[in-house]
Image (cartoon, rainbow, N blue to C red):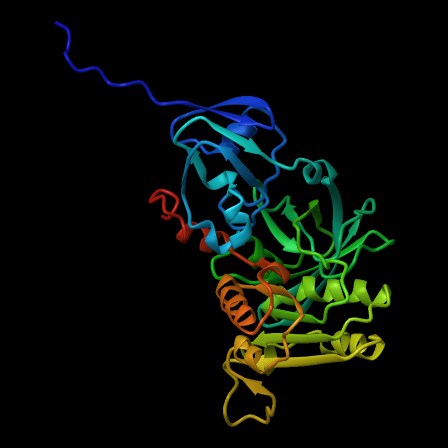
Amino acid sequence: MFSLFRKSAPKEHCAEINGEAVQVFQKETILHAALREDIDFPHSCRVGGCASCKCRLVKGTVKELTDIGYILSDDELDQGYILACQSIPTSDVTIAVDLTAQKQRKTVPGRVVLQERLTHDITHLKLQLDQTLNYKAGQYADLSMDSLPGLARSYSFATPSQMDATLSFFVRKVPGGLFSTEVNDQDLLGHTVMVDGPAGEFWLRPSDAPLILIAGGSGLAPILALLKDAVEGQSHRPVTLLFGAKSQQDLYRLDDIRDLALKWSAAFRFIPVLSREDERSDWTGARGRVTDVIPALSLQGSEAYLCGPPGMIDAAEAKLIEGGVKRTSIYADRFTTTRDALLNSADPVLAV
């Protein structure tokens, strides 16, 4: 006896990626399908937190597993950009992606030569690589360790590219974070770390516009790298650096900032802002959220670089635009944890 009802076959779609056709299975993301077919598609976190897999949807429709508005700019969204790791085709699609950056990446082994506590929850990890890794100040790399097999996390370079093949990263301990807890709590001196990079589009664009730099927590790492690289290039751009922290104990690398200010050939203004400093302390500087300071700044004609948690970035962007900074003159690097990205997911399986 034959049933009158037949279960329909899983719906597959075709993704044409830079002219190469790939079959995408039901509920499969574009990134997963591309990697399955050995396409060297740029990617890093795979959970919608880093934008490494950013690509342009030329034709067709997709279901997005997360809200990508917090990671892609309005201009990118208007141009049809999506995140391949968070996009499931709902029709045949045509995708355009820049593969040049992926070709520049390489994996280099190194060993930990310095593990320095900067604050109660941020550790400076310095590596000596087996060979030099060239990158733009502001970019990041994926780090992995033998002690945590199969686990890789993205961290921004804290210095410009060094001729002695050393790298520095500022790693903030994330509650429940396996990698960041290992770096902050375990003795890793001499341990081998694999570095895969460089990646990211956060770097200083050529311009004479005044600079507004805003960092929160470990977001100071790429900002310092930008500044150190610019001072070596004898930049003459006026700088205003805002650094948001909870208390005085969370301020770090102040000597580096003072040294930069002394070497800078134009005006250099540094404003640390504390959000949870005891009212009875001797702190006489700014209090509140770092974004509270923005309206009092002279912003017209400025270019802004923001690095820190997504909430801070979103609030800063809104106030900068309100103050007259063009959206196209704002560059941001959102420090999103894997947990943040999973909780932001619209897929109930991913959000567990």
